[in-house]
Length: 161
Image (cartoon, rainbow, N blue to C red; front, side):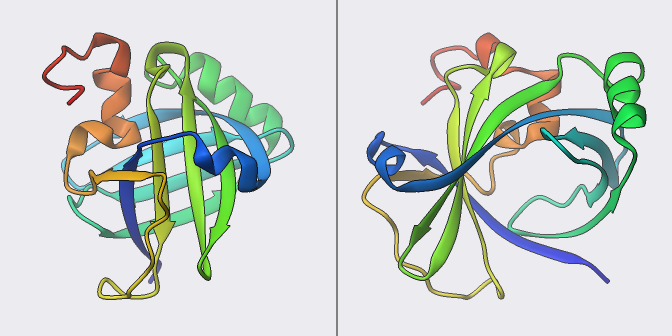
């Protein structure tokens, strides 16, 4: 059984930019969302994946990911996925023995920047970088699947706090 343990945070400053060691642009879309799961298509510059993730709120969820042909993924994104698509550039940052993924969103979610860390256990300790802001792991509006239905560009001032 595949499991993902991930915590999500807002980013408080650009200090991470000078230490990012890798970056990649992603386009992703959702084929469906049910009460129990979501099905996502994700395309990078050279790969494509179909991802099924449980619709559990919190830091621990089931996740399954399978490679798919790039042309098929592009067609699914263009013709089958809910709009708007999620567009973002992911930056990888090593800090205190952990890898952080900083997502800088584009398109309808431009202005949103979040950092995620994958852990081995929900209780695992980690050191927080100085550029890390508030934790939003338990706030659904920051989940990519929710950003399709209610993009950051449509959030009011209260939702952006």
